[in-house]
Length: 218
Image 1 (tube, rainbow, N blue to C red):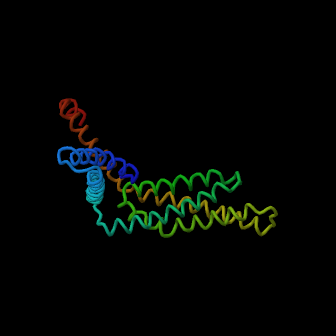
Image 2: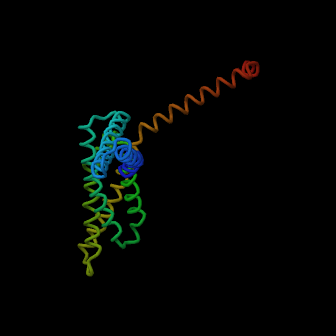
Image 3: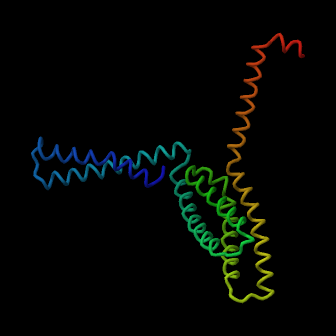
């Protein structure tokens, strides 16, 4: 679950518990304002902690991950987020019109892979090559391209470097597309299987409705 949304849900539950605890301590129990407020705050904090542990446990169970695995994935996703941010800054500084589509594709694919992995952490293992190799290459090349293209005076050597960098980025964008496909490959296989099952079911239904017609067609 999204951390912010998770916090909102916990707060939504903790707030009434805090108020109820405060009222119970203040009136039926007969405590003074100070202790009542202290117990109410403690009840709210404990509710937050218990709900956080419960929600994290459900999340890990749902995605079949251990706490150690999830910490490892979160660490790498946080590092990747910083790299993608660096890459995007470089991308949007480049004013070369000829590479606009290429840069939009790179931005779109990297964002899509990272977003999917954040939502379903177990996909990280299908995208390790992206996170540990391809993303670093794209970041370095976009920063280099941005730096060279921003130079006020460009000679033949810089021009050639820009051409080579643009060509390499084009190849990398294709590699990123393969990374994205690899991340969703299980979904594609599942969809194809479900399509085959649906076709088989429809065929059986049709055969059962028109047995005589199918016999003559054969």
